[in-house]
Structures are given as C-alpha cells and as structure tokens.
Length: 219
Image (tube, rainbow, N blue to C red; front, side, top):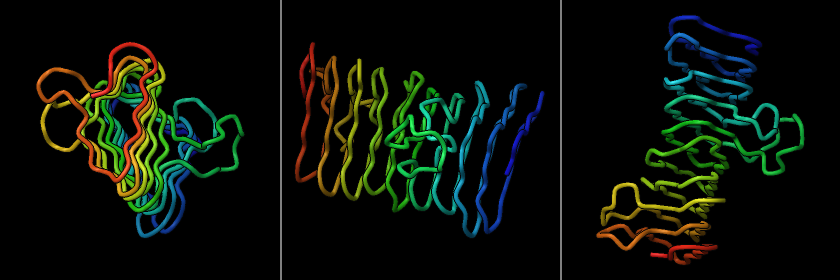
C-alpha cells in the first residue's frame, strides 16, 4: 500500500510483484511522469494519482479499480494510459457506494484504455479531447463533453455516452471506428458523426443503437 508518494521534481515509478498495489495518493508536481505496475499477478487500486500536464501509465497483471468507489477523479494527467489483463473498473473495492457502477474516473486530454479480457467502465471528468482508444470485453465510456472516437474494440458490447456533447470521428477517415462482437450503443446530445467527408461513425457489429437527444443528427 502506497499511502503517499510525492516528488517536487522528477518521475515516480512503483512496481509490485505478485500482489495488489494500492495507490492512495501519488503526485508529481514538478513535471514528472507516473508509472504504476503489477507483475505476475495483482490488481491496482487507484485513490488519487496526479501528474498534471504529464503522463500516467498504469499496467496491471490483474485489474485496475477505483479505491474509493466514488465519483472523484482517480487519475489526473495530460495523457493517461491504463492497461489491465482483466478489466478496468466495474468491481467494488469496498469503498463508498456513491458510484454504483464502480467506474474508474479519469481527468485527461488524451486516453488509452485497454482492459484485456475484462470489462471496462470508465468516466472521463476532463476534456478528453484526444482520440479515444478503448478495448476490452464489454466496454463502457462516458463524459460530459464531446467524445472523439479513435479506435474502440469490444468482444461483447461497446457503449459510449456523451451527456452534453457529441460523438465524433477523430480522424474523419473511412476506417472502422468501433467494432463489437454483440452490440454498439451510442448516446449523445448534440450529434453522432457528421456530414463532412468521412465524418460518420464507422461501425462493425450485429446491432447498433444510436440515440441523439437534441440538435444535429446521426451519421
């Protein structure tokens, strides 16, 4: 258990072998990156991990979970890379019950989320303006602003929810943006895809459900 780790200048790298890693408070305030890792086995439980303007990389041999089960950012950085063998979020860590879906909350501009063979449940509390890279078994991602889709792959279901913005194709290209083995569900308020060349959301799944609440359309 890492109760508190902080640097004024420089990176932080913490590795646990054959056991869980609990990161209660980890902060770099002088421009350093943060790397958290479990090898052989072990989950990573995220409390408050910050590297403002920098990169946080979390790599778990097991799963990555929210230590507190709350709705406060667990990870804050310019770029966040979460990689887990057996899922990100979706399981209770025994903390509060304010977050009933047990999402991992992130605050970033750029994000890459790989849940391996497990479920992914992530809520973006920041701008999330970079291309979203997301993969896992059943994946669920939500944020208040626009979601820029890069590459999303799910062996089961893929669900994207923008509570006040749009879902867009980051690259405006003709390659498949979202692939799911069972179904794709898209929920937005100000549009899904667009009318410009290659601006539509390209999908590959047996079933696609798209709902846009107010302005713009679904493409």
